Length: 277
Image: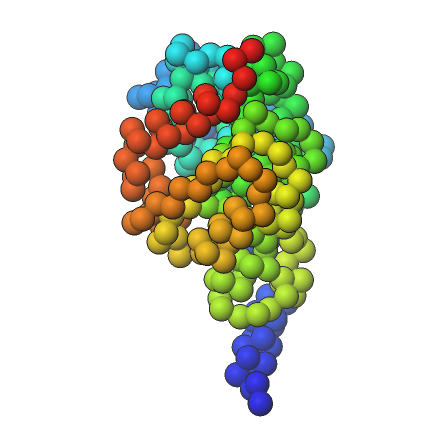
């Protein structure tokens, strides 16, 4: 008799009866303003941007190139943990590549209005794309996507259905909400029990035809590399490159690689797979 699994299923189902995993997946903090370091990115090289998504105002920063590669732009989809201020160090690393960078907050994060959900994440990602493409200093042919953690879901969805980037960089994506749930709590529970979203990255990536740089920490305990990252990568179309980083947990890839190596790896890949004009 499968008494223990049944009991656990009842407990988990009861625990989540009044909520869904969407609200647990997104760990956002609201802000009335952003306080961003100028140690790497001078204030003169960034523009505060207001956009509209599903009738809500969302915000971001367009970071102008430091001058070395001003014709390439990276649209950055940050992780689930918090707002763009929290991920500003990631923006600083991408700034060091010499590319333009656009980082934005999803609904409910930082100064952005609304509440994040799967549909809101995709809508926000499209709003960010449309803003970037509206700029006269951005070439659509030289636009790369970088999605980290839950941000990979936004990057994959937009690349699958809206716009094919020059190349796609993914860091620690999950295969689907079902897979993330099962690999996280070790229970074979349908994601529909506790979440409204499916976030099926492993299937959507089959629709994308853009060079892929894939990075995942071997010691990632939040999003398991074999049950999640490897599944997404295996479904992706070539050309593709998988970099497994020993000693890296979910947030530790730049540190484990060494920041200069991380910057060089991302820069080289994007330059190699972005047309010259």
